[in-house]
Image (cartoon, rainbow, N blue to C red):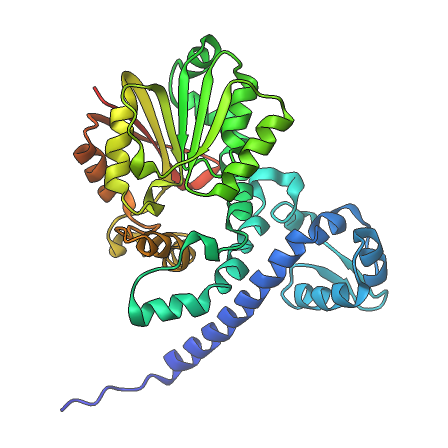
Length: 357
């Protein structure tokens, strides 16, 4: 029997890596808090300031701000002058941590870490018993997703996303029928309805909470060319109804994604276009070994996307279902043409331009 040699240097390097992982996990939590409390935004506007000055400017409790600053300084996210006892956010860091930078704000994504942590007990139970954790258990999911899509999709909607499909902007100006499946809080669709009053917009989502938010925004802007409805995409039974159908980061969450894609194909008019935004990844694990946020996406998949599908007896495709699986399922659903495009600002997603003929 061969004895495996114990590599002391490898062990020490791994132990150091694990300590770094623990620190990084803690920093992610503090980054989420810094984003939600707007501390990063406040610091970006201040000269070097004391913890009391920062707390006053942000309207927060100084003792908590001081402890948060300790985490930020020791993680080198924020600079500290030990003599003056002042803190400052370098401009190079603010460029990725503040609301002012829009789609470059990475702090938004840190919110997923504490959000997923709230369902850890339920997920562990699923490891033993199978099944899944339903949407209702994720208390802030739609709020975080709306902010996420607001950066990656809504902010780029007019200057980039619409331009992926030649002639689409002109068609929207003239007037077409549009459906967004899995519309969430309706940010993208409400923006489109405001910009193109001659077109007619419909948004469906499984979540009553999300639809209520979408309707409230539509009413606030007095939009007459849009409607939102609570509906399971797998129950869609419309035929030849829409000129343009969209799904933004929604198909892989579905309990029955194969049925949903078939329903989309049926609901799309013969000369219509289906735009599917979904995660840029390979179907096979080996194709994702160098993915820049592969670990994060597999974690989100395990603790949200996969489990919510399984909670409803679904396929549990997961976030990382990948391009190969997506193309296979689109073909099986009846689509004939698929073109995949990417946007420079959005390395996380692929944009599938899909047609029936």
